[in-house]
Structure formats: C-alpha cells, structure tokens
Length: 221
Image (cartoon, rainbow, N blue to C red):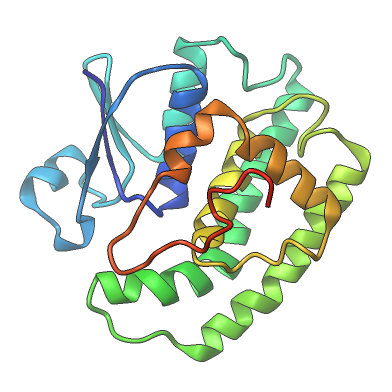
C-alpha cells in the first residue's frame, strides 16, 4: 500500500493528495507530527518536512518532485502540458504559490493562527496576520487577471498549477481567511476545482480544536 506522511492543513501535503486522488491512486494517510523530529521520520526524510510519500518501493520527499514523479509514472489524466513553453508556465505558477504566496500569505495566516498553537509556539503575531491579509488581496487580484485570459491558471487545461493554488487556498479557506467576494473569476475557478472528486477527502478534513467554517465543504458557496 502506498503511504503518505502528511499534516492535514499543509498545502504541500494537500497538493500531493490532490494529484494522487485525481489519478485514482490509493494511498494510506498517516498524520506526522514532524515538529517533534521523531527519529523514524527523520530517517524517511532527514529534512524533517512533510509530505513524504512511500510508493513504488521508494521513499520520496519535496512536494513538487513527488508530483512530477507521479505525473511521469502515471501520465493519465495528464496534469502537465505537452510543450516546453506550456510546462514552463505550469512550473512558474507552482513556484509562485509554493514560494511567494506561501511566504507572503500562507505562513502569515495559517501558520500564525493554527501551526503555532498545534506546535506549542505561542500565540499569533497580529502584525504577521495583517500582512498576510494585505498580501492575499494582491494574489487574488493576480489570479483574477490570469483567469480573465485563460480557462485555468496556466492555460486552457487544468494542470498541477491549479492544484498547487487550490492546495493553498483550501488550507486558508479552512480557517475562513479567503475573501471570495474580491474576484468572481477566482471564486468560479475554485468552485470548479472544489467540485472535482479528487477534492472530497480534502473537504472532509477535520483538525481538532479548529472546526472549519460552514461554507468550507459547501460546493455552492
């Protein structure tokens, strides 16, 4: 059985879960308290980070590398385009969300509001929360601009870039930190991807002490 060591609200873990589910690859989910730096987990990934995927006799870390491995070994349904230029755009946007969006928004909102409490690091820093909320407006506007020109974020077909973005936004939506009124294009895009069967397990996540808002699992939000 394939096994994914994960944290439910981690956008990097969610991205891998979405790709596995889209390709109908069964996987056992194992929650990993990575911050405790358990010796068994550090043997699986010396970097001490999730996700870690055990699949095909391999133990793999780093979400983007994992997703591309899954794509190459299980090419249907295709989540990477055919041409170099199109693949570049997908990878550029994955980098945007996993680096810039993560640093400016996810880390300032999700990590402050949830991760600090779970890992015993204290209370949220209100300055970081305010910075994350400000930055989220810019990112939602940029997504809206992209979706003015395209059916999906990287082009006319759904790709890994959409799953990377949806992984971050779904984690933030779990704590009601996405302003869905800001851009209709972004809300319509998220409703479309949220309705996919691959999203069902994501929408069923429950984190003790942090109940999701009523609209979180509602497909018609």
